[in-house]
Image (cartoon, rainbow, N blue to C red; front, side, top):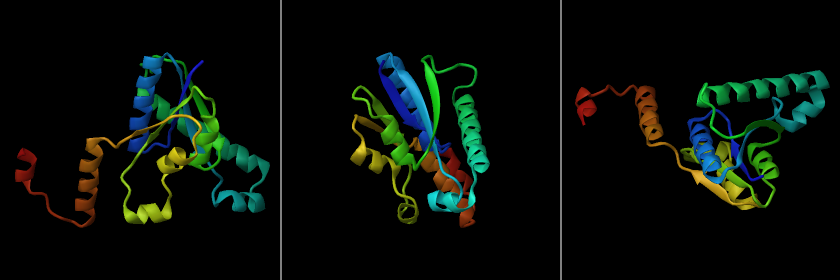
Amino acid sequence: MRRIVVGVSGTPGSLSALHRAAEEARLRDAELWAVMAWQAPGGELASRNSCGVPALADYRAAAAERLRELLDGAFGAAHPGVTLAGLTVRATPGAALVDTARRSGDLLVVGTGSRSPLRRLVRPSVARYCLAHAACPVLTVPPSPLQAALDEVHRRNFWRVPLDVRELAQ
């Protein structure tokens, strides 16, 4: 059976990608695989030195619970209308998605969030990683236009710029 693999992290971009992936799964009569990558706090090196097996099991369980919450929040009682599988993978997000979407008939769906220069330095782009390494087609979903408006509100609040009510009438 064909699979649509989508990365889910809880960001607005990943939720847009999730809904687009559900749409693609309905159109292609495919299974929808929602993948959440997780890592132990401090990364792989820290987990080798300080985390035991019980702690890693707790982290995995927390990731699975978070994925369930995100899927319930995204679709609610009205499920996506296709077979939905949730998968938590202990890896970086890009590697988890590329490793999961390795079949020739798969389609990998990733969201592209707003990328400030600082964010690019601190956290590499999952979408770019997937485009460079995936063995299947990759569909990138741009951020919602509402995300740009939300980012503008956050910047305005951060810099304490007063709201001009005349802007709301436009």
